[in-house]
Length: 67
Image (tube, rainbow, N blue to C red; front, top):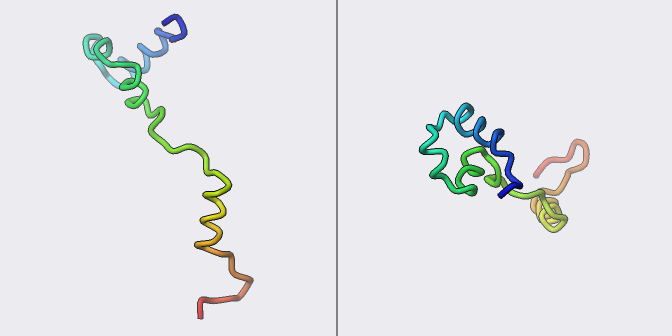
């Protein structure tokens, strides 16, 4: 567990999130990461995702409408 920067994690949990030491030390690393907003988002869009968006919402030429 020496990979963790404990002082920084303790500052983030106790100062940033307002956790008491008891609550902080009962959290799992995954719970703390989620509370700090890490791992909650989605990954970057893949090429397949971009292609799907382009197919669903194609660009229109200048002055074109949906008529």
